[in-house]
Length: 235
Image (cartoon, rainbow, N blue to C red; front, side, top):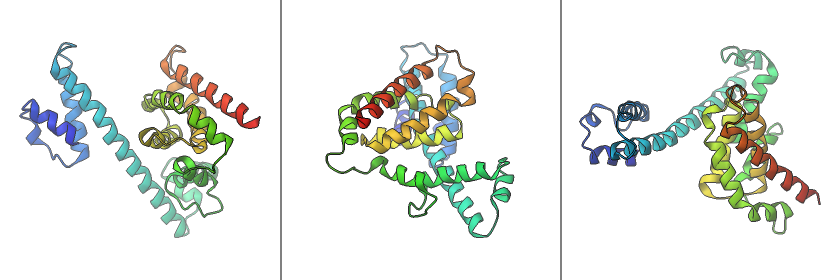
C-alpha cells in the first residue's frame, strides 16, 4: 500500500485524495481505474510502468484479502459446528450439496489456520511442516535443499497462474506462497506442491486453456520435480 501511495504522489495524481487510502478495497479499485487509463500510454511511458507496478502490488493486497476471507470462513464454519449445526446445514448457503464437500472445505481451512492437535486435521499437520524444519539427515530435506532454486522458479510460475485456480487450488497456492516469500523450503512444501498441481490441472479455467498455455508448462515442470523427489526419497 505504501508503494502505491508513493507512486501516486510521484505522479501528483489528483484522484488519490478521492479514496480512503487505508481501505484496501478502495485502493484496489483505484489501481484498476488507473491501470485502465494507462493503457493509452506507450510501452516506454513511465506512467504505464507505474501502472504495471501498481497492479503487481495490488495483487499482493488481493491475496492478503483472500487470506483474511478464508480465515473468517474457517472461524465461522468452526463456530457453526460448535453450535451443533450439521455439515449439510453449514454447506447449504455455500452451495455445497454433500457432507464430504463441506468436510473437505473445513479440512483445507484447518490446514491453513486450524488446530493441528485435532485427530481429523491431518492436512493441518502437513501444512504445519511447510515452514518448519525436518530432522537433520533427513534425505527429503537434503533433496529439497539441493533443488531450492528449481522449486522457487516453478512455484513462481504456478503463482502466476493464481487467477486460473479454483478454490482448492487457490488455497494450496497461497500455502506455497509462504515458502516462496520466506525462501524456506521443506518436505512439507513438496506435499503442498502436489496438492496445488493436482488441483490446478483440473481447475475449470485451466481445462478451457489452449494446450500451449504457460500453465501447462509450469505443471509439467512441477510434475518432473515431484517425480525426482519421490524417486530419490524411495531410494
